[in-house]
Image (tube, rainbow, N blue to C red; front, side, top):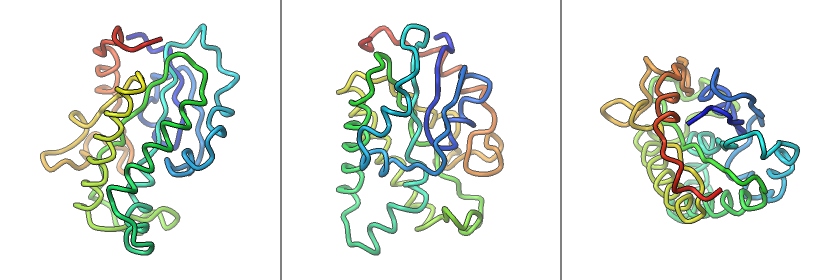
Length: 200
């Protein structure tokens, strides 16, 4: 797969595709929840991108939701975990539906980090246990995979190459924080993808 891509999203769009994407459109602090809530707003962020030259626009959202918002919705608002996951993915897919680019990719939520203090970033603290966030990540990625298959979007899953034996982010392949730091395996994933079955 040629790397004629633009990555769009939270800070993971910069780190995961560093040196790979021809351009990144960083949307600071934007969550999957906000993308779904604001609907057409996302399409406005990418409307000037040329579909003739780009192979894919890859969207990256969800890690912040996993890190601090899902647990908060469960404990403070009494929402059901499965309902939250479904709502996030349904809203995300609806927002992507407003984007007219013919080739859309969705990055899986990266494995959760378990080696930082809860208040490492006070603006976006770690909430819940490590196991809670691992479960949210797995559930969210399963739902994203299924939704992308239905929508004919490319789903890019980096989990196997960036998680340890317990499912958490490998520190040695991270940036020392919550992001992917060594993009070698991202390149290999992109190079090995069979996109022939994805509608364009």
